[in-house]
Length: 221
Image (cartoon, rainbow, N blue to C red; front, side, top):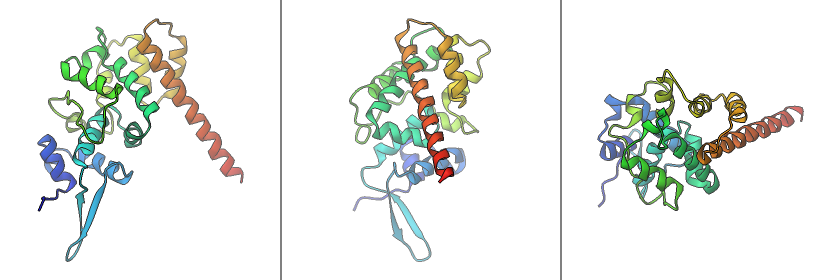
């Protein structure tokens, strides 16, 4: 009989992290991924409680989801990367900008071979449900972050001198989409990766506006 694991037990096996003592934030993130149904669990009725276990085949999904969550801190975005191929491609292009080969902070953030493999895998026909992404982190970023923010936001916020593309990225990661879009409009560049980031921000802004219009229609009903 195959031993079943709870989500905290699975995290300990995958990353050698005890969420109870080392990172409550990581457990909270994992719980969010369970609630939005990206991570599947099974329940078993015990004498006085319901026990919850990771469903078969979900170890790799959990691993990849938590790696992506280090970059994209919103669990909804992580789920969408799994399910929406076009959105995943846009995010992959943004990752290439964030971790591109340059002297800016974005270039320094992930400068090792596994970081390149991580970005390439996200951009390709990589099966996120069955194959583990290359892990470029010696320590999972959520372990060190005390607030609900991504690795990139933390790194960029520590930089005293940001290049123009970094400023756009920082505004985007802070949720200041209007500001990021305005700066992107004013920035003239031949860098294809930065151009793709500008398109990604413009699409995000457009989708937010469309959602706002939809809410307004409901309020008038």
